[in-house]
Each structure stands twice: as C-alpha cells, then as structure tokens.
Amino acid sequence: MRADAQKNYSHLLEVARDVVTEHGADASMRDIARRADVGLATLLRHFPTREALFEALLRTNADTLTQQAAELETTSPPDEALLAWFREAVAFTRTYSGVCDLMASAHADPSSALHASSTALHSAGARLLLRAQAEGTARADMDGEDLFALMSALSWLVGQPSFAPRADHLFQLIASAILTTSPISDMKTQRAESDR
Amino acid sequence: MRADAQKNYSHLLEVARDVVTEHGADASMRDIARRADVGLATLLRHFPTREALFEALLRTNADTLTQQAAELETTSPPDEALLAWFREAVAFTRTYSGVCDLMASAHADPSSALHASSTALHSAGARLLLRAQAEGTARADMDGEDLFALMSALSWLVGQPSFAPRADHLFQLIASAILTTSPISDMKTQRAESDR
DNA sequence: ACCTGAACACCGTTCAAGT
DNA sequence: ACCTGAACACCGTTCAAGT
Image (cartoon, rainbow over all chains, first blue to last red; front, side):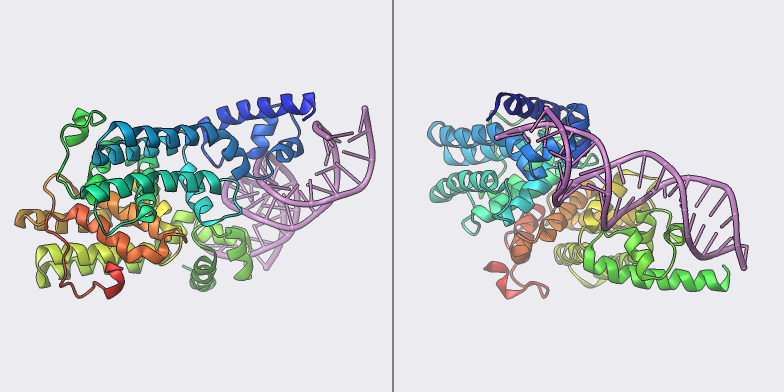
C-alpha cells in the first residue's frame, strides 16, 4: 500500500470509530468521509461495503473474544466458562449500537465481509457449549446455532434503549434456558443487582 | 371525511399492505404512494409517519391478540394459556418482517402512533403471566416487561432469515426460561418438529 | 496507484399552488 | 377540504478524469 493510502486507511478507521460510536451501525458513510476530509469515493475504495468497514472496526474485539473462549476452557468449569463467555459476547456486540443486526445477517451470508467473524464467534461458543453439555450442565437439546441465536437475540434486546436497564436480569433469564442447573450464585461475573 | 379522501384512505391501506408484505417494515413510502397512483404528499397526509401507517395496518391483528388473551384466560390452565398466547404474539409480529423493531421502539416512545398497540400487548401478556405466577408455573422473578422483552427478542430472532427455520425450537428454549415446569408435552399448539 | 468531483437514482419532509 | 408537484437536504453507487 502506498504511503498516502496507508495514512488514509488509518485515519478513516479512526474517524469511523468515532462516528459509529456516536450514531450506531447505520451511520452515514458520507458523513464518515466528510469528517475525515476525504472524498466519499475514497472511503468506499478502502471499505467497499459497510460490512467491510465493520470487519476492520471489530476484528480485534472478535479476536479477543475467541482467545477468551480458549482461556476460559482451561481456567473455569464448563458451565461457568460458557456463561462468562456468553456474557462477554453480548457485551462485545454492544460496542457499537446496531451491530448485532449486521452480525446476524452476515451469519447467513457467506459473501459478507463480516461472515468470518460471525463464524468465529459461532465456533467459539459451540466449543464451550459442547464442553458444558458433556458435563451435563447445559441443555442437551441445543447446538451451537441455538446458542448463537440466543446470543444474537439477547444482544438485540439489550441494544434497545427500553430494555437496556434490565440487561443483567434478561441475561439471567436467557442463561436459565441454556443451563440445566438452577440459578448459579457463585459466579464472579454476576453482579448483585442481577437479581433485582 | 370527504368521499374522495375516504376512498384514498382505504386504497392506500390496501396497497400499503401489499408493498409491506413484499418489502417489510422499511418499505419505501414513496413506493407505496407510487403504486397507489397518488402523490407522496397525499400518503403522508393520511399517515404522517411510518408508525401511523403501521398502526392502521396492525390494529385489527393487535385487537385480536388482546381478545385471544381474554379467551385463553377462561378456557385454558394458566401455563398453557401463557405459552399459547406467547406463541400467537410472536406469530403476530411476523405478519410483516421488521415490525418488531418498530414495536420495540414504539414501546419506549409514548409519542409513537404504535405506542398504544405496544402497551396493549404488554398488558395482555402481563395478565397471563401473573395468572401463571399465582399458580406457580411461571417464574416468580419476572414481570410483564420481561415477558414483553423475551417476546420481542424471539420475534426479532425468528424474523432473521437464518434463524427462521428453527423458530419452533427457539420458542421452546425461551419458553423454558419463562415456565418453572419442565418441557410441556401436551399442548395442542405444539408441533412435532419442535423437538427436532 | 490512488484520489476525487460529479452524475445518478433513490429516500422522507415541507409547502405553495391548485381544484 | 383535500390533493399535488416541486424544491430541499439527504443517502449509497458508479465512473470518467485527474495527479
């Protein structure tokens, strides 16, 4: 990549992060280009689609999440690991409002620039689920796809301003649909107000 | 209302139903007007916002749902009534793709034309939930708002093309988060493939 | 190689002018 | 009373012309 192109790339990513933080996943591409003092066509040249832009914006976060899954697998008991990771994954989609719609459609569309990230999340979750199922602490009648679905649904839910305040409680409700064990009470990640 | 206005109103509603069925909740208003052989401004005069249009499109469906709740309350045991209605409510939001986003934001916005419908659903569900809770078959630590949240989440989920095929199974998963009783097996509305 | 302005076909909002 | 065309300020896509 030429020097000026490289500079544009990093600058655009930086500006895009700001704009998207402020306006959510359906921020105007034109607006991003404008704020970066660059032609709209230049932005589109670096990121041909909105998905391509978000792939760049979310890559590191998604990688972290995959690593965390691997770590949890060695450090925590299966049920706790599954729930802790599930919580992290939901938090991840909240970095920018509206990303879970993007992720959900990318999940179904192999040609999407976000498809790889989406699949990575799917796989990481599926591994943790299998581990918990082997132990008998997660429902036997669900698979990685169901887990991904519940994760997406919860992400969408807590992304709605009206439901955001009860995010922790809703997490508990969904969690109870995944685990066979009754409400867990000794998880580090669980916060006091979760029980209302 | 003047005769010509009345005629425009019904015709627009009819055309809107077709267009929205085809293109979902974020169909182009301009397109609806165009197909109705009417100026865009005329459409906007009858339905000043997208929410106002959907209020008209969904009114009868929402009313039916409220009635069904009342009927179920007298004809079915609390847990079955709750689940059967929950299923109907999810089916309702599937009449046009994308309505649950509309409903969810209307729920938080009292000035939305859809706010009344949203509140009606909320109340109908809350009554059925209380009844099941009194009996002890529904989780005690959730309220009408949680039920509405889970309903919205499941609606959003099955509205995603990738998850639509496992709608029944996902319904079962969410249902297990609501009821204290284990998987119900004798519900008329339950279909065989729900268990995969 | 990379950038850019401009043309294009859209969108919803608003309003003065028509019947 | 009710309708309408047109102007407006947007949007993302595409591409010929520039450096």
